[in-house]
Image (cartoon, rainbow, N blue to C red):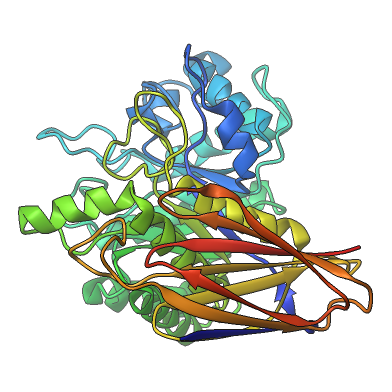
Length: 447
């Protein structure tokens, strides 16, 4: 039996942006997912691999296709599709996290992942991209984009994102971050979007560089694909320790690519991972990870990927209908708690039981997000496994009567109401049955 104890009187800080994603809704298509995307209330969309959706978009070499051109001349830039795409994201209420660099290149020839011929010029090109999006340059916009990330996965084995050395990337990073922070003191610049936090050869060069040169880095970003919450918690702690060692203990930690993955091989294991991403198990995993990261030193979490054409890793939307899949509702549910704003104390006991609770600023409304997740490799829907009985005890919300509403995300419900009950005061107990991979949002509303 599982137990969850909530004390709405004991606050734990704000609900952080653990429900951001990579990429936004489609900019131009007959079957749009704008309505569903907006309803999920995604805080940020990181722009990476966006050219898989639309060519000539976002990447520096796509916007500035001729590196020998004059970087001060607006005619050297092609902002057309990027601007349409960013407009589409902003229209659904999502902020932009802009990755400066290139989309991953799986093909046998590299184009964007080759180090620029002139690092200083590349930094000036990035400066003009920012001026276009934030300061109106070249018939541009005033979007107020705060986060700008320098490149993606320069440590990736196989050189699919960066064909240069670690030292060459660090040189580019240093030149770009100093130039951009000098031009725009109020934006946040960082990186390097590491593929793997335990890449030893990377840290042998990056930590000494940070200690000696002390670049004005606002955030450190890294990635993780895994199947257990413990793997995420461990990597976050490693990132925190490395940044502290380098003298950047207060820098923002941003895990901006993540999803479910047992292993890349053998084939059946990889296929199970892909099937999980799109299934009820993926929804429970997403909630468990978001809850784990909320109660960690991490500042920001970004799921990969909400891009419609990302067949393997987009667990949010169906590729044909664009309608929500089960994992979409994990983000919708987390947004319910994020809108309340303040995390409150919630203690969970029981194997695979993850709980997060929040309340509104006025104290009259609260919510619990609860899931039952274990990495059972024989199932993606939880059928055939015994459900968990969970007792929920809560107090500290109000002295007035409280209506408790349970909404379920399971094989038969898409976060729809399954029960409601009125309690005489702001405390009480509630017992429910939670099948494997099922999740619930329990709302507590003062009457």
